[in-house]
Amino acid sequence: MLEEFAVVDDRIYATYLHDASARIAVFEKDGTKVGSLEVPEFHNATIRGGGGSATLTLESFAVPETRWRLSLAPARSAPGTPIETAPRTLEEAPGVPWDGSAVVVHQEWAVSKDGTKVPLFVVHRRDVKATGDRPTLLTGYGGFYAASRPSFSPAAAAWVEMGGVFALANMRGGSEFGEAWHRAGMLTGKPRVFDDFIAAAEWLVANKYTNPNRLAITGVSNGGLLVGAALTKRPDLFRAVMCGFPDVDILRFNAYTTVNNMPALLEYGDAAIREQFDVIKEYSPYQRVQPKTAYPAVMVMSGDLDTRVPPLAARKFTARLQAASSSGRPIILRYHP
Image (cartoon, rainbow, N blue to C red; front, side, top):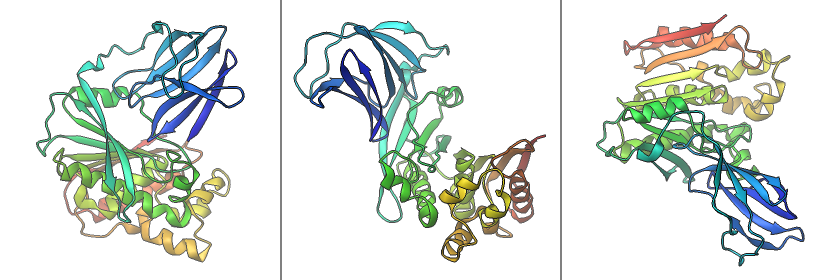
């Protein structure tokens, strides 16, 4: 999927998202493709410049954002081969003192409930073996046409450095494969997003990276809805959950957002519409909480100043989980006044 482009010295450098990673193709202004610019595997990339040089910004799970100065060779390359460049000169080093040379990143594919293949990135130290008991942290977003790209997170880097496995799932609802991928995970298709996420978690267990007693999930905002739906649908699959600033009472979301976030109804659906109500009531996390259920440890985060996600839903969700859970694991609310 085409994401952006830059015109550098009368050539068009078009950045595409290919299986959730960046690729840069190079065209003449008449649309003739003259090659591509090399981008390392599983990276995010942007290019800007002119006057015979350009700045290429690269980032991945193992490499913090780094800027390189390129001297673009004038010679045209054969179609399908990398555009020749002079050696890359470091323009701006990462602001994080981090060496990712011992970290490996690979992309896997889980199979969702309806047979759709769902990509996930798996990140860990090179010496980590799939023994079935590694502490594993899975995250994702899956909504609002927002792609989850390879990016550097200091928290994830620390987790991996200590021997944990970090995973990012690219569910439907995002833009990783264009508008059709987005629409497949919105409105009455929203439950597919949760199926995709659960499939990614099951892949990590089936492939011996972890087990349900060592698997944690985290998400914020729409990602908070994601992990809230996952933990209420499959409480047996996770040991710990960080649910940040979440939309979790979708059945009443249309009443809460008359001022601050009405556009979200175009993504989640409107419970005032019968067809959408029937779907929402089956996945809305607050309504799915069941008494005497062994829920994972959960930390819900919210605060009074959240102008887009109703904080009262987080408070209600926490209270209901506390009253319902039979596991004895902590369920707490971290609240920002």
